[in-house]
Length: 259
Image (tube, rainbow, N blue to C red; front, top):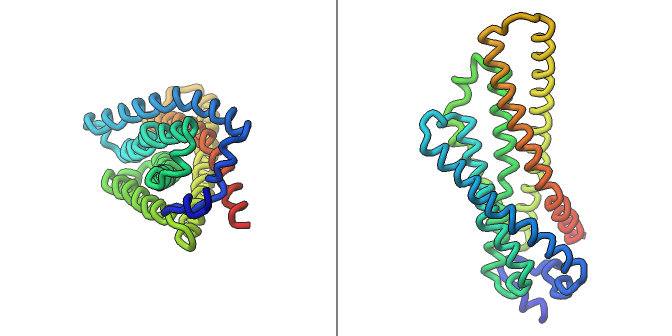
């Protein structure tokens, strides 16, 4: 099989060499991926689908934070329902990735677009910060329409970047450069946001212990918002932890390709 046989919209990258799929390391890694994905894929697809349905069908959940969470659930649902099954297909039968160009293009596009999760996580983190640090201005600054437009804009930008990633040359470089910069910036936003939130929660708890008195309604609201923010922090942190291995390997591969 020569390089022309491997050529399609997505460039014939080194990781599509048939020899790599015959190695012992790929055999063991594929078994591990299949074991994990066979469990996590249906859970992710069904769980996030239920989140989307609950948000759409429950009027009192139509709030800015839940709109952003719903947009994040769409991405995670696609990962569980589309990306992971496609990855499992590659693990079972590598030829679908080596020979079938429409499969390669679809897998690259959907996988890339669903990487918008990190941008949506950053948006959720920013929204939680606004709710805690600007409580009086929050309702006027953060609205349902603005949250919806923000989610749509994030999806649109990542779809455009994903389309670029399906082509070689300059467009591929632009798409990958965009992804790297956005991932790095989003992680900084998420980290900075939750450091501020954790410091606020710590300060709030110290105040409560120092006063030994009933908490005012304002403090109660702050405590409630802080609890929601911390919970979202755990969810986002766990999600990023799951993304990091793949991101790390992809970045090493891209730098290797550039060299």
